[in-house]
Image (cartoon, rainbow, N blue to C red; front, side):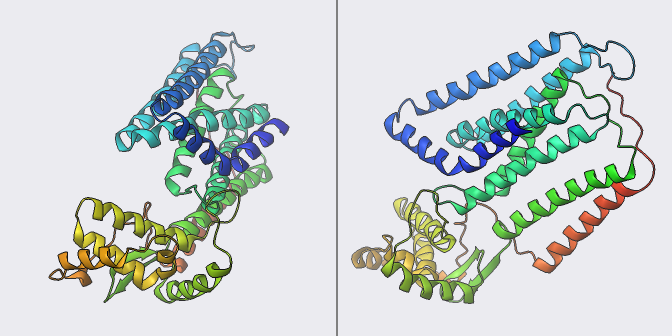
Length: 372
């Protein structure tokens, strides 16, 4: 287990510096950036596929009996891994080619992590080896995104956890093709099934905690500034504004490095970026609406290098005097913030955890799935 654990620690605690390396690369080679990153991803992915194919071509020790897996099935697993990763990468490229180049590397990164965990557990006589490797790989993805959410300059969100989980699945498909599992039956002993169910339940709680922290928030409806979504409610935003105004005069927050991100500052910057982009395209109602949100709830963020000069503010105000700014609805948040009652959210999570534990703890085993 030492190698997969070290690889996981490298992935998780290397996250704060990956963005720095990427930014430095983009600054140093602005014209060649896409080519360099694309070449790294393509070469690494091609090497991984070549390794999988070479592994499939090697004969299995057991060529017959219940542990044998046909050569056709093993090739199918490799093709499925490549097809899923290519389809997901293609979807990412349709959204944003620059982001897709970086996110596509997750398939190599988390595929390797999944393979290392599978390698450590593949000797188990039932499905638990595959299941533990999947849980561990996804758990590393959750930890990775959690660290990124706490670090300035990086973004952690549920979309990336899903991406990491898909990459783990592709890695396990390739690993199972090279080294087929002995069996896919459930553990015979009830205690072993309960341990496996507990591992899945813990992972479910970890994902729920991440969603609660990052994606569950509030819709602020203000008669002066309009409507927007935030992880804070209106009183908390006003309290945070007063706190930051006093604190930042003494110690401004760091922008980068391994330090805890100030999410109040990050939210303010979302609105400042949306405002500036709208002003650049002469979308005056949006620019004015975002500036009103900043002035009402994120005043210290304006003082931290985001305030319009008085002349610019007066000029833009002339363009929107007849607009109904009270009805403005902001779309500045870069990832979804959901209005979900936390009690309801955690009640559903608790029911899911109990269902998992019950399913794995009940007597009897699931019939073996055929891989032949």
